[in-house]
Length: 300
Image (cartoon, rainbow, N blue to C red; front, side, top):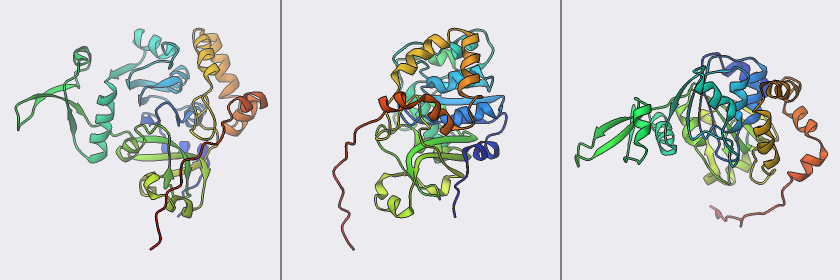
């Protein structure tokens, strides 16, 4: 059965005030379009969970969507701090929990498998234990070794962007694979956005690449260019200029308000956003094809 609906409808139906929202994707496939739609629809009191929050959560905090952030490493990649989130934390305007990268992924793994917590080896980041009382020490019942334990993370909603999916939500993604699978299986509801909607036969032609199965997906949304300013491997490049420019914009509350007014509230959807970027920017972000070798699954 088709689950294909517009992104605006998916956000309206599946993201509610007070929800814990996990926007997945590591380096690329970051679902900026969904984040902007959440801002446009005026969601409030969200708990924003994400490994490496990136600019998407800077923008959502700036728009007043969040009451708390849960994260591992927070910054404008390759540039500096997330100025808006950092300022909100320092002023005590929003709550926060911090984990190591592996700690965040372990939380999702626990959530995805129905476990209450996940043990992990001790890390050098002992200061995190002091800052976050949810990180506990436990004893391995077999060896007696002292381990770290982190609680399961089960977001109300996971938002996952992929390169291609069929209308039922079976999805292929490639390039750098982050925590998309774990986040989707851990979440109560899953919104899938995709660069392309393809026939089921395309997905079935390469089953090993199907990281997100349709049976856990609630909504499928066709949203080309959903990742800008991050990138989608094989579709468009990272907009490094934007990351540098955001550092300047985010240093001024007036500039942030103006940017949100122009680029989020001032456009109807992602198509309008991409068109507004202009032909020159679109051309700079084009990528040349680089095909992998074909896989022969044989005939049976």
